[in-house]
Structure formats: structure tokens, C-alpha cells
Length: 267
Image 1: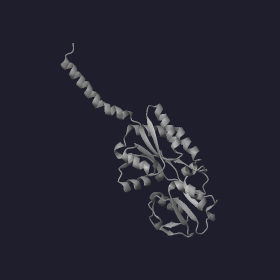
Image 2: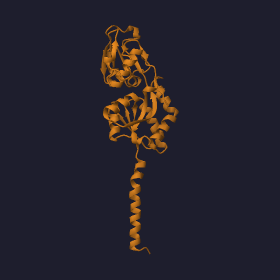
Image 3: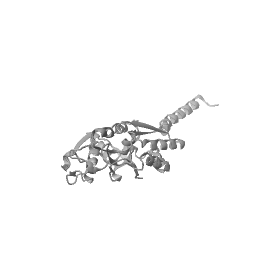
């Protein structure tokens, strides 16, 4: 027969173990929350999430409509990782906001194209033509570097992806630059001569991503990365998911088909 004192001691011990183990067990069962910006590429993440579920990894996808909220949500702890930005964009956002984020692994690479409803060749660009591109700091610099590579402008020596319109030192065709939100460049095409934008936005607009006048030369610098808070860089859930995503041949096929071949891979 167990004495009341012994029973009470056992009850206390069991309760202590449950209290100690409860939070960690709960933490182990929390879903991996992945923040995404609207993009056709998210279809590949959804496919990998289904694979992960079959392997016992619970994944929740949270899709945003802009390029600001995914990082804000990460900083606030509303998501565990996001997957929408390249390193230059990350560095600029982190510096501007004081975020301590870490790029864990590279993913796919998309590149800018010159899209137009009016032109079939850059030779058709007239003096004073209007060129639309994204208005965020990093993609402004990227667009200007692209225009320089096409011989349409010249930038100050040493200009990189942080370049601004003030760094344009030569503009022989007197091009007029129209800056809008990145997602709006495709919608502006009827009103401008050409727009510099990504295959993902072209696809979302129901147009052919391969139908560009010319494409930017691919660069791993602009690979989309899995980004998390620095203290969570070794989260085993994230490491497992990236392994699933990178290891599934269907992921590359989905992305290649979606972008009609206008996509690369950095893993």
C-alpha cells in the first residue's frame, strides 16, 4: 500500500516532468511557417510542402502580396523563414531596419527581361522612350546595370546594384525612367515603351515569360535565398525542408515549366 506521503511525492515528480517536457514537446510539433511573396514559383514550394507532410514535417505557407511584409513578418516572429529575396535585397532591408537575418541556403535564380507591347528589338527604341522598372533601391540599381550592359546608359565608375538615377552619367537616347512598384511594371507596359521586370510577374499577368526582347545575364548574386532570423539558422525543421525541396526533381521541373526555361538553380 502506498502511503499518502509517497503518493504525493510521486504526483509532484510526475507533474514536474510533464511541466518540464511539455513546452519542448509542443515546440517540436509546431509547423514550419514559410513566408512567401506572390509568385508562380510558390507552386514548387507547395509541392515540397506536400512531400514534407508525408515525411512527418508539418509546414504552413503564408503568402504575402508585396516584398515588405515577408521580412516584417519574419522579424515579428509570425513566420520562421521566408523565401522571396536575393542577397542584395536582404542586405538593404536588414540594414534599413536593423534586422539580424541570415541567408541559410540559395534557391532558384530569376532574371530581368526587357518586355514590351510595342517593340520587337531594342533598335526600335526612339529618342525619349519611356522605360519602366521597379522603384525599390536594389532593383533600381539592378535595372540600371542591365541598361548599361545593353549599351543604353552609362553609370559612374564603380556603380553596383546600389546605383541610383543620379549615377547615370550618359543617356544618349534621353530615355525617361518610370519607376513603379515591382509588381506594377507589367501592368504599365501599355503606357510605356518597355519595362524591365521578372518572368514571375509576367507569368502572373497571363503573359509568356519567354517573350522578352532581351534577358539579363543570369547571376548567382541574385539567387533567391531561404532567410531566417540569425538565432534560428540551424532549425532542424528548416534544414529538413530545404533538403526535401532541393532533392525533389519535380521542383526543378515545376519551375522550368512555369517560366518556360527562364530560370536557373543555385543549389
